[in-house]
Amino acid sequence: MAVTKSLSIFLFIAISCVAVAQAANFNITNNCTYTVWAAAVPGGGSRLNPGESWNISVTNGTTGGRIWGRTNCTFDNAGRGKCLTGDCDGVLECNKTGTPPNTLVEFALNQYNNLDFYDISLVDGFNIPLQVSPTYNCSSVKCAADIIGECPTQLQVPGGCNNPCTVFNTTQYCCSTGAAGCGPTDYSKFFKERCPDAFSYPMDDASSMFTCMGGSDYRLVFCP
Ligand SMILES: *[C@@H]1O[C@H](CO)[C@@H](O)[C@H](O)[C@H]1NC(C)=O
Ligand SMILES: *[C@@H]1O[C@H](CO)[C@@H](O)[C@H](O)[C@H]1NC(C)=O
Ligand SMILES: *[C@@H]1O[C@H](CO)[C@@H](O)[C@H](O)[C@H]1NC(C)=O
Ligand SMILES: *[C@@H]1O[C@H](CO)[C@@H](O)[C@H](O)[C@H]1NC(C)=O
Ligand SMILES: *[C@@H]1O[C@H](CO)[C@@H](O)[C@H](O)[C@H]1NC(C)=O
Ligand SMILES: *[C@@H]1O[C@H](CO)[C@@H](O)[C@H](O)[C@H]1NC(C)=O
Ligand SMILES: *[C@@H]1O[C@H](CO)[C@@H](O)[C@H](O)[C@H]1NC(C)=O
Ligand SMILES: *[C@@H]1O[C@H](CO)[C@@H](O)[C@H](O)[C@H]1NC(C)=O
Image (spheres, helix red, strand yellow):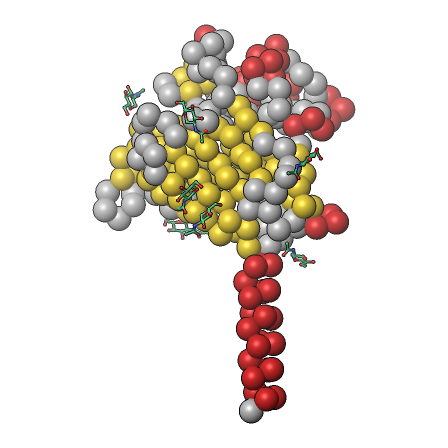
């Protein structure tokens, strides 16, 4: 009896620890005045009316995670349709990257020294202002400037401000030759001046990458 009881207490503690250690929670809230169709890989997607939120649970050790918002979408009951910005192959539940322009949150969990890495990237352009904040005491990153309103004419597209690589497809803008042949451009500076904490081109400096102790949860807000 005593043995069984200690065993069940042990198992309870063990299972609780596993449950706590295995995943990070991302709480994604739409604070915009318009509907946003949130997208996450891994995670899928969810329609968020103004004020609504969606939680996703991301497994410990996940790399290459991406979260973004889609605008002006129409989906049928089977979750098939399209979006003006951020569309992922016409499905509500994304399992691949979105079409630019889309403001992106990127992350990798429990990496070197069990650190999480996270950033906002404008390398795929900008469609919705956003903010990502760890629940631990680590930096909150925000990009909420009026990038669409001030977008250079050649980068303007309905619903967003494109990245120059998508528009011009040159080695200079796409950094196709790697770090050595790739620096800031007038277009990347347009993004960097407005959102200094976000990546503005693929080889942007270390000021755009943030770290936090693994085990933190995250809060993401559209239109902070
Ligand atoms: C994540 O998993 C690694 C082992 O893969 C472990 O060392 C680490 O403590 C875990 N982190 C959290 C926060 O659960
Ligand atoms: C959603 O996330 C928030 C903050 O990260 C957390 O407080 C809340 O418990 C989560 N809700 C669910 C249903 O997991
Ligand atoms: C996300 O966080 C907000 C603020 O803490 C909370 O009101 C909301 O219920 C959370 N969302 C979910 C799905 O738990
Ligand atoms: C997107 O939808 C909003 C309404 O939610 C509308 O005001 C806006 O004109 C639409 N944008 C485009 C480019 O169709
Ligand atoms: C992605 O989603 C589509 C539509 O839901 C599905 O047909 C496809 O098999 C999925 N692909 C992967 C790799 O999960
Ligand atoms: C958060 O971190 C900062 C900088 O490391 C520190 O000054 C501050 O006291 C911390 N706040 C809390 C509540 O731990
Ligand atoms: C971009 O240019 C490369 C050649 O420099 C070409 O292979 C590729 O198909 C182009 N991509 C697009 C989307 O046009
Ligand atoms: C939501 O937007 C309002 C302005 O419209 C702002 O004052 C508020 O701080 C935002 N909330 C969050 C959680 O970012």
